[in-house]
Image (tube, rainbow, N blue to C red):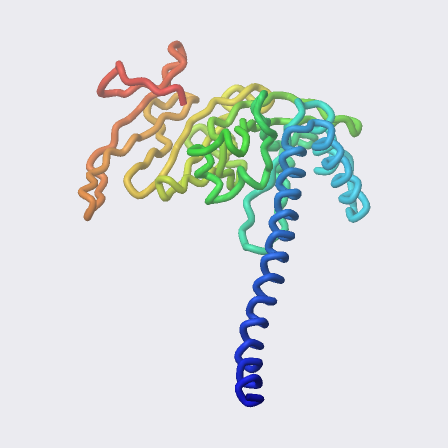
Length: 294
């Protein structure tokens, strides 16, 4: 009798242990889910609250000031403060994409060495009426898929901006729209050797086509005039490259035609598109009815 009772107790102990662990796990999961839900709600509140978003930005800037060393007039912290104060709510100075996983991202700012006091920067504005964008959701390779679901995370409008710093004050010289909503990578100052014209190359990832897109802003009318935009790109079965077709100050481009059988990809032809300043468009040299704005 005692033997049977002891045997039953031995059998019950593992069962009771499993039940206890399951209850604890369930309670922990519920608590964890509640915490996650509270975090999501807090995040959503910030995304739709201009005052809360501005307060967070100001707090982050104050922390950056405490950690910064070697500050100078119109540095990136000052530039961030200018964007926060002078641009619509939900506008941010974006960061370059990280080159390594654990890199600290750098602000997307270039100080023009040949033109002291002039600063190029890339900003992103939130679409009016939608939730505010989050800068981390619009920078990087995987974030270039945002075009497929942009409204869920807010729609970003990118701009290349030329700032001018004079006596520790910042002014906007010009800003030019970048026709993309996500996947920003980097930008740099280049030189078009055929006409010795500088241009700013703004590079975006394009994960859908396993490639990249470059938005090239040519300073055809001088440094302080709004630039001329030419888009180029390259992927597994598409490509567009800069071309000097008619030797004027505006760049042209080759549009490549590919044969893609699914097993083999090969460039079959290249069609020149030439800029027509009177029409404000690129014209296909083989079919004048086909035009492109940039």
